[in-house]
Length: 313
Image 1 (cartoon, rainbow, N blue to C red):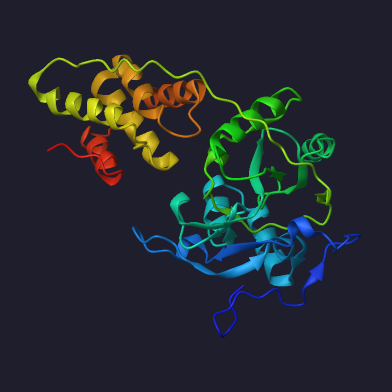
Image 2 (image 1 turned 120 degrees about the horizontal axis):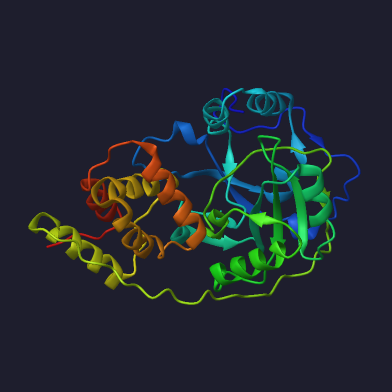
């Protein structure tokens, strides 16, 4: 936690038991960020300093463990989220000058993945049998598992993630699609029974999803002309305007409120530019938006596009 000098410290640091510390693959720098809840809205988070990935995985302190315990004992998802967002975080892909894919400074040699909908013990058992998994441990919530997989470089990061996702699905593991984002935050968690493989192989697979045929429809009425023009511009530029999941849901709700089922195709079209796009996940979100009963104006779509740098003249 923060000490009086404003430094992140692992007081009374202890190493996880039975670790061979001559683990060269983990002796790489990653950037440490302050608690996300302390970042002002609209301000790009900046790193505090660099630490080694090995320290992040193997060292802890009573104060850090107490914070993790409070997150795991929280009753509601919202309470868990608030506590989680007060934790320190890294981006396991490497060091960054600021949050964001374009701010990557040095590559760590790893891609970070989250396992969905599986008991932690079972997930770690399966992951430990895969030669390219270097680490697997429980997430801060204690109900999930995250892992590190070695990859050779940052080239075609999404294609490597998609190949990994397909390969793991064959052994019953479902990955969170948001892990296709290299600059995704990883909140601090400590697992004394984590799996380590210091001689993990490098995963070199790539997979390219069939290109979606974009067929953005036109909506009738003069009031929809600007929206039609905006959607065409988004498609022409090929820019992801969905932002985070909260923004994505608001966009879905805006389409649902305005056009109902008729807006589904256009919602798919603009969602397809997200690096981790999944047709099934997009349909599920749109179904939820149609059932939700919330009201969101189409101005939300224009705002999301503006924030992504897409504006009509």
